Length: 152
Image (cartoon, rainbow, N blue to C red; front, side, top):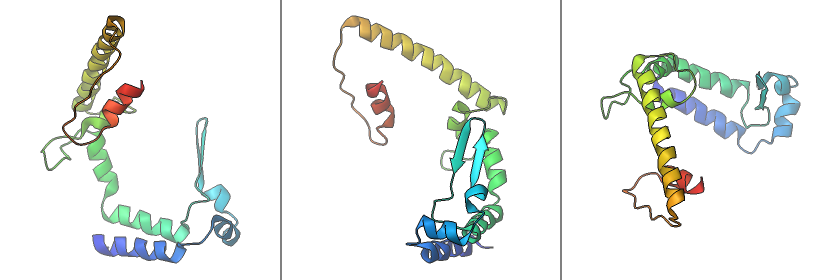
């Protein structure tokens, strides 16, 4: 399957399912409520009311297989150079989940942990100093980091 034909197939499924309410999807597929759910420990995820069906899900899995998504996922979590623009690993994944992967991922997690300790010390120092306002001057891009700090 070519990349484009896979996306075209998904688009045709999206068009076919557009406007179809979840009660109609549940009525058409009696096993949907049980089959489109997942339990992981104490968490329960139910996707049965989302606007997709078994055919659309199958097309999504076919596209993922045709693009070898499983290998790309593994390369990402193994710390391989997947950021082709910068020629380096995308190590933000090292900050989540299992840290037993590649050495580069373990090192990134350790570095982030050290930075977190230093940031905590800085926050404590600033709180003790009486500073009440901070002006954050950005260089563009996401404001999620500064917003997280401000909200904390």
